[in-house]
Amino acid sequence: MKLSYQIATRFLKSALTQTLIIILGIGIGVSVQIFIGSLIQGLQKSLVNTTIGNAAHVSVTDDDDGFIEDYEAVIRSAVDADDRIVAASPVLNASVLIEKDGESQSLLIRGFDLQKAEGIYEFSEYLDEGAMPKADGEVLLGVIARDNFELSVGDTISLITPDKRTVECTVSGFFDYKVAAPNESWCITTLPTVQAIFELDDVASAIEFQVDQDLVFEADAVAKNVSAAIASGSDTLVVGEWKEANEQLLSGLQGQSISSIMIQVFVMISVVLGIASVLAITVMQKSRQIGILKAMGIRNGSSSLIFLFQGLILGIFGAIAGVLLGLGLSFAFTTFALNPDGTPVVPLYIDPAFIALSAAIAVVACVVASLIPARKSSVLNPIDIIRNQ
Amino acid sequence: MSNILELKNINKIYGTTVKTQVLYDINLGFKEGSFNSIIGQSGSGKSTLMNIMGTLDTPTSGDVVVDGVITSGMRASQLASYRNRSIGFVFQFHYLLPEFTALENVLMPYRIGHKTVPKETTDRAKELMKLVGLEKVMNNNATQMSGGQQQRTAIARALLNQPKMILADEPTGNLDSLSTGTIYDLLRDINERFGTTFIIITHDRKIAEKADRIIEITDGRINMDLMKNN
Image (cartoon, rainbow over all chains, first blue to last red; front, side, top):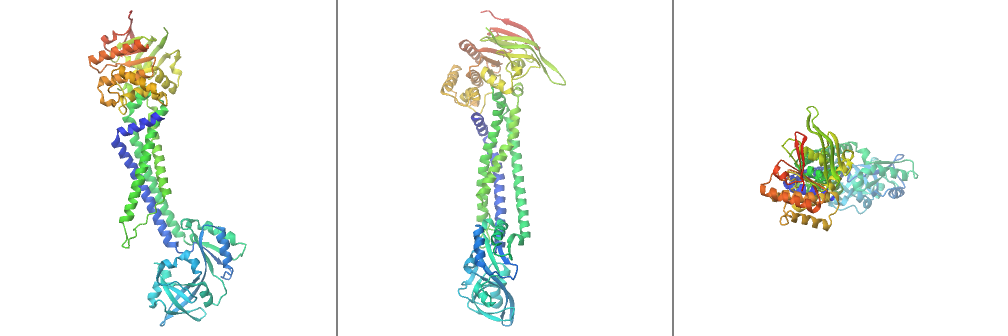
């Protein structure tokens, strides 16, 4: 084994240019794999984040009268049931009309436990001006609503409820989620404010949960756990999650993943074919050496090991080169291809586990590719070499 | 003395559609410690005979018997280890591994059979390099030596495992007459010192005459088998 390894390294060193070219070839294959993989993962993360990053991943609603009375208990049992939940807040949603100078528009007034809901909606992150509502009767509006009604921080607005009562609120600030719908029609305030406007007891219309950012695709499993945990409390509560509401997005993501895997598979296949053919030629180049080694009594197994070792060595160095190239490419891409605001055009997601997997696949592929030359070396008959001197 | 190698009714036919018989009913026995030469015109079948004696090739019919064992019954791995232990090959074209130094080439037969190389073996390899007059160039790469030096390295390599038998096919075929003389003296010297059996193939009668026994092959048959009486 040691001899086979030494012969393999000597063979590789003796044709250094050829060896370096093969390593470069493998490296480029691996780097493309890493780059494409990171790109697609990054795109997906950013897409998922834009779509559901600031939305409830799992929500509990009441099927009966639309109100959940003992929402604190539901939150407690749900959070206890699944530790993937990172934030939970009760919310009371209702429709109101905003009216100013004869113009009116409908708003979705959303009363949260602001502190808890911060974990889901990151209000302070998206606050464009002003401050968070501190007292009851204070609300946040979106920047589109601000522009439509020419509002500024501290203004008093009139909200008209469906049963035609007018309530006055103070605007404490404006948010900008960079998405038209909430910017135009959300009115964010505290839970007691909405309860007071609609003259309700301490109830919520829904409970929203945020799942750990890296585990958003497990929302269905979380929903199942939550459902099981709260079933004993009430049989009218319904648990929903983002995946069932976003089937199109999911199928889009899946299509993207499949095409990414296809690209990676074909890149790997071409790398394998390349190595296999180059190594097969090496067997021809080195057939004299193999022949004399066999005449001197090297076993067929050891003579194939030489080429398996070559594949392994080329694979390891190729994978290292590929990881370096791939990371370099990704770094260059995120450093030089920028939006006007300095953020990368395409966000890359560098996942060490994915990179390690790509490298490992490359090494395995190279060893597999060397099976053909190894077999050739094994069946090579020394007499053919000696006779054809 | 007993026979170290015996050939019994050896026939060799090449080709399946167009058959060419190269060897016809060869019967030969070689005594341990003897110094033999096989001569013949090119194409007479002497190289084929040597390849069969060295278990590199198989006869179409007939038996090769080494140490009383018929080789046709041995598995590939058994044959490989038999060659490794018992036979030293010296070919017309030296067949050194150009990726290794002269000394590493000499050590190769030992490394094929063993996992590690003890110091005594390395010392013996160096001793052999000295014997063939190459102690100064033993760390040179095989490609950085003259043809004569490479051939002498191949001889040292053939001797390393202290084989009972050395098979040499035109060992001086592509060397000048001065180197040829040196190498034959060397082979004789080794034969006398270690009692190694030599079977040397050559087409040069002058060289063959230095051996104890001259076998002439003509058109695949033994034409002459001459023992010299010392």
